[in-house]
Structure formats: structure tokens, C-alpha cells
Image 1 (cartoon, rainbow over the protein chains, first blue to last red):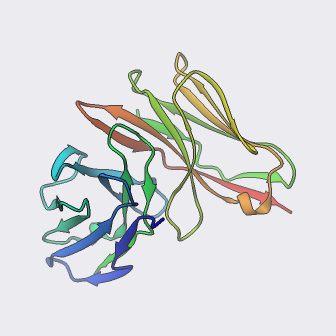
Image 2: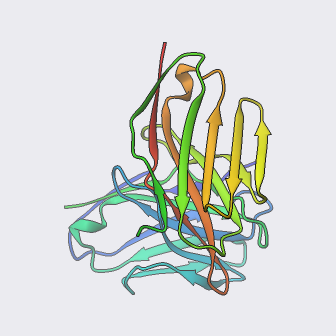
Length: 112
Length: 112
């Protein structure tokens, strides 16, 4: 049973650039949520997708956008990168109407 | 007031002791509560979920929920050095759909 996968593992970008992170949910799951985790902090909710639509959004600017594909995989896009966007980006999947989420290994983004 | 609050620790307990981790939340409408374990450099791993007042036991772990006091706790019996990690409390908040709010986590050290 494949768990949640994310790519790439690590990424280094320059301020002002754009980045795309990818996530494949656990087999059987249809809902994907994205989180940003800064060092020493808990994960911060960015947004959640199911049925290919953004259903819930946290307090993140419009520079953060996403997409969900028919196979339930998802992308997180961040435009105009800032130094403060450096963090671990986590994807979690769940089955709609259940609440237990399973996390992927994360993508470590460094903005220089 | 933060939506989910935890003592950052570190909490240090000797091997074989009971570790007690606490969490308070601000949204009285919350219905779903979770504990995640996160090892350094890894992603969060779901260890317990609880939805009703009272205790829920799973092996060495017991989650306790008191909705009237807006309080969730996690007890780890017979603590082992391998339990040393950051424990994240998470609460689902319903805003037309649910989003998950995490606390900042409590660092636990189990001394051999």
C-alpha cells in the first residue's frame, strides 16, 4: 500500500522565483491538504483540495496556489518567492468525510 | 490567544515512566482531535485520534478529551528512548469545511 509521496525532496530557489511542489496521496484517499512548517513550529494549514477544487484555505497570500488532478494528485505553486517562504512543505492525504490525515515526507524549500 | 496551545517543553522523563502531554484549544465547536509524533527531520506521524469525551487507549498510548474544559492530553506509559520526539496536538476547526490547526508541539526526551 503506497503511502503519500512528495517531490522533490529538497529545493533551492532564489528570491522572486516560482516553485512547484508535487504530491501523490495515499492509495484510496481523495483529499489533499498542504502545510508549511517553519523550524520549531507546528505545521500551518495552507489549503485543502478535493474534487479538484480548493475547499478550505488558511491565512496565506495569493502567491500560494494549488491544483488537484483527476487522479487526486496535487501541486502547490508559490510565486514571487520570499526568504520567509523557506520551510518544510508537507502534503497530507485523507478520505473525504474522515479526518485522519497521513503526511508525506515533505519538501524542504530554501530561498536564498 | 492561539487556537491550539501546547507547552513547548522540553519534557524529560526517565525510561519506564509515564509521559503526560497536554493541549488546550480555543474553538468550542471543534469535534476532532489528533496527536502526531514528529522525529527530528521527519514528517508528522498520526498516533492517536479522539472524537468523544473520555479516554481512548491504543497500546502504550492513551488520549484523553474534555470538551467542557477544551483540553486534550496524551499519556505515554512505559516510556522508551525511542519515544523521544516532538508531539503535535491537532484540532479540526469547521468553517464550512474543516481545516486542521496544529499546536507548536512539545519536545519529549526519554532518558535511558
